[in-house]
Length: 181
Image: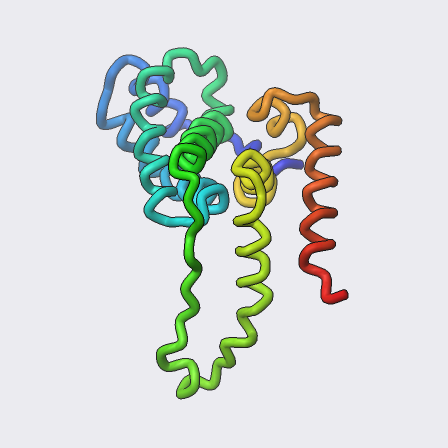
C-alpha cells in the first residue's frame, strides 16, 4: 500500500470543489494541507531550501490555473507534488549551480556531539547533489512523497516497470558510491 494514496478527507474534497469554482479561502486550505510535503520533495531535488521554497511558490499559480483539470480529488496530493517537483527540476536546470552544505560546528564540542557522526549524512547529500535533477526527483517522489511505481510512472511519463528499473539502477549507484569499500 503506497503512502501517497491517502483518502482525501471530506473537508479537503469540499475545498477542492470550492477552489475549482474560484474560492480563494478553499484554495488556501489546500495550500496549508500540502505546502510542507511539496517543499520536502523539492528540497531533495534542489538541495537548497530557498530554491525549494521558490519552486513550491511557482507551483501554486499553476495549480490554481489547472485545478479544474484534476479529475479525481483523491489524487490531489500526488498531482500537487508532481507539479512542484517539475518546477524544482526546471529551477535547478536554469540555475545550474552547486550548493554548499554547511556543517554546524558551533557548540558541538560542548554538547558532546561529534561532527564526524554527520559524515554519512554529508556523503548522502553530496551523492544526491551529483545526480541529475530528474533522478533526484524520482528518488524524492518515491522516498519523500511515498509514490508507488504506478504514481511514479504517471509523474515521470514512463512505464511502471521502466520506473522500477530506473529506480533500482539509481539505488545501486548510490549504494556503490556510499559504500566504504
